Amino acid sequence: MEPRNEDSLYRLAIEQIRKSGVKFTVEDLCREAKISKKTFYFLYPSKGSFAKNAYAYAFSHFDEAEKEYMENPKPGEEAYELFSSYSDLLMVTSDRTFNLCSLEQLLREKALEEMEKRRKALKKDLLSSFSSDYQKHPSIFLSIESTLAALGKENRRKALLQDYMEVMKPLWK
Image 1 (cartoon, rainbow, N blue to C red):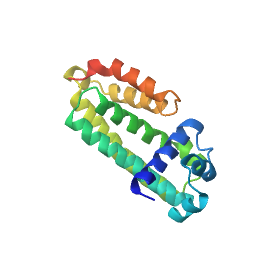
Image 2 (cartoon, rainbow, N blue to C red):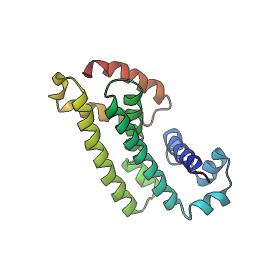
Image 3 (cartoon, rainbow, N blue to C red):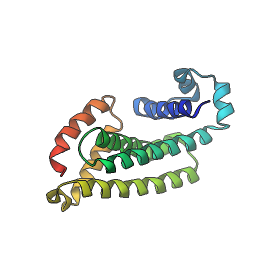
Image 4 (cartoon, rainbow, N blue to C red):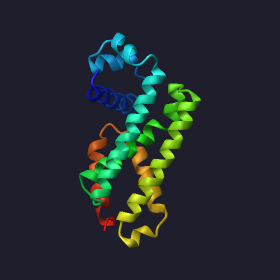
């Protein structure tokens, strides 16, 4: 399977978690991706190995979005992608997702460690790109993070996130 196709499979898994929680099966994922279970298990010997790759994809997607945002730290497509990818990370690293997936402890610890790195990076990036009036308020990031966590589970996330970006525009320099 081409790396681009594997990325599509990871994006699809994240979308499935958003839509139905972790109640989807490998069979559901394969049906949606139009691949056979045999192909899936050829690529990933276990669900755990797929999960590790899907988490790595989600973290790298955030890293790319963060890099693009830092090149243009204003409200717009880059900020939207940054918020969207962070919302995905909040969703896939939530206790609920880990508990329902019964993911192994080492994967959980590694994912939470990686998540904390991204959390610190996002906080630094956002606060440095906001006007100085907003940088002084420590609760501003908590508010943003709480909103993004809630949006991670929304079916209409794209529209809601775009509305949220409009509300956030006055914060940027």
